[in-house]
Length: 477
View 1 (cartoon, rainbow, N blue to C red):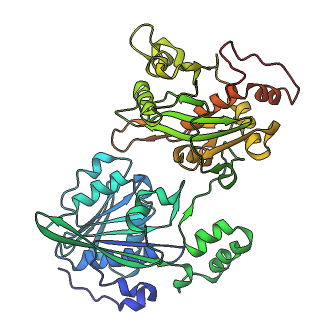
View 2 (view 1 turned 60 degrees about the vertical axis):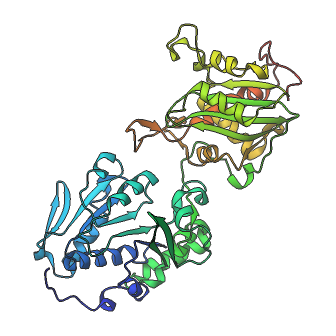
View 3 (view 1 turned 90 degrees about the vertical axis):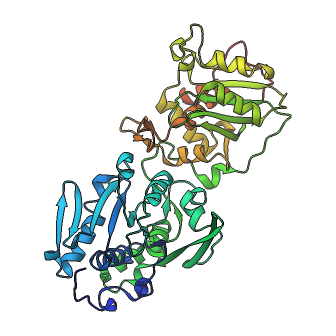
């Protein structure tokens, strides 16, 4: 153990955090507004532990490894330098690590390299900085923090509580915040293990920029300015409250969640319209609709991940959900599903499998010969969302969370098409497009089921006669 003269805590941290100095709970979650000094506090407490604990190995985690050096790593490095302790540490950049003369250390790991998360020997601590980790990453890291050589085992989070989609559906919120109305709280959970009662505690700590006595006044003024100019940014930057993240440059730029979503119900007396997208990663997609005149309501979505991400499995899940439906079934989807080369057996394609598996419903196939132009169909659907073009109304069910996220977060490329950026699956390592699958399936449905309106839109509103095929029923809606 290295003996150092450590400053009085109240001199180097804000008063709001003094009560956390001696906290030894397993999980310590710091969240709130920007500039509240939560990351500064964690950096200081971790440096203190590194110097004073007999054995200490802390993981610095972010979703992207290449962002760690300029965030938590730099924060800890600057803390050490500010406190005049740099002679006690070695700073390495390849790989990223900070090593103390007593043998204790900080190591960096990113969620974009799952194998590295599983190869850490005897860590005692982790700092999840800014990003809420994927649940799989959290489970992997948390289960590795079990060394019996440590003074204590802890997991620190410093997060800004913005979530893509509905934050109440996020695993982190459900695990640590559900059923708590207070901003800061402490809970203890007891679990029976081998006939013994095992406890672990969680401290949740909320702070705002006013708690940081070192934050420059100009920054405070900027944050307060959002109160009148941008209420969303004010809730994020000033209040630090759980918020659905807003993004710009979206493909469905006129989709409004408050206006275009609602609770929808299945009506057995009406036909079902189901539409497919055949990408298998991250899931295979089927969206389920019903139509009242010119009002289309999405009542459900089926998005099956591996190993169930196959056409027949999706159809069997549809049967499980709608076993007694008898009012008619119409099939839509990606025209590429007609190609035989999508299946190894000659004569097979996705639609052959769909029609065979769902034969009990006597389905009618409504598949376009080619996918509608992406830009044009996007403009059409945006216009329906915002202006109810030609009397059309599209409503997405609140239960269709993946579909809603698609409309909220799918980006627009420079050429006006859908920007389907790829991510790597944390478990399989397989690249996949996070957004675009449910909305693609719905595009095919909208452009066929409302072919007349879509054609009029393409022609600038000119009335035109549309032929949709011999299987189209005038009374199908």
